[in-house]
Length: 275
Ligand SMILES: NC(=O)CC[C@H](N)C(=O)O
Image (cartoon, rainbow, N blue to C red; front, side, top):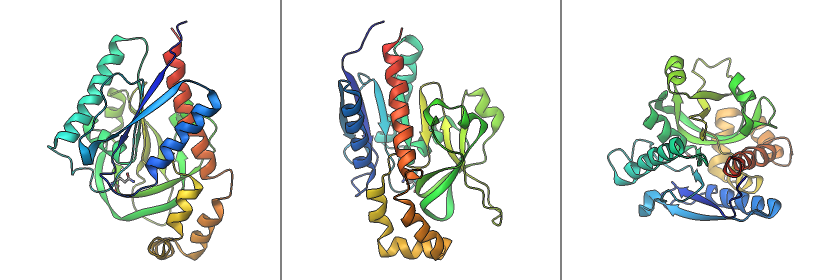
């Protein structure tokens, strides 16, 4: 067994310069993971949409963030081309090497990957979805190592105007991808439940929700008048206060935050160190 003594993580910032809680969330997770495991792990940030920064292929692990706007905004743009090329390079590398590179795609990055791989249809929602919602694991989701430790349903933060729907399951299978989680059931609403997580390949996984979200960031959002009014309008006052109170519940978003990205890092680092 060969031990890699420095694990390099690239964090791709898709926020296009907009204020967000995601980059803080991802960095804090990496810092606490580093502290807890005592592994020699370092990370670099790449401001892709705003500054055109793209990591090279010397990193072991890639985490790509959420971000604002339409997931079609980058069509034909250099930054999107660079992002898709990087995913191709990682796949090529993995085909030829035993120490595989792993990728985690969050929200906006997840939608871009669905476009790239032609999985489902990326469409605009009727209205914005913002809040803490239950998410259902599919059968593949209950067997997913990265989700090991979650309840079914589990709770996570949603913050988006777009969605991935209408999967062609035969096509998913042919491409080696599987749906891991679906939007909460809304029995009284006649709308398709969107896809909340996909395993794109053995090394690439993505979520529509925000596994990096923490109670601090979420509380800040929930207390904003605009968000409060929107949640009460869409879901009622009880749901709003339930979301706010759930921030202290260790079984809700804190569980999701403590399970998914750490499991992903464990898996990615484990495969780097075995062979
Ligand atoms: N938080 C996000 O990454 C949102 C993704 C995308 N911009 C949307 O609105 O759906």
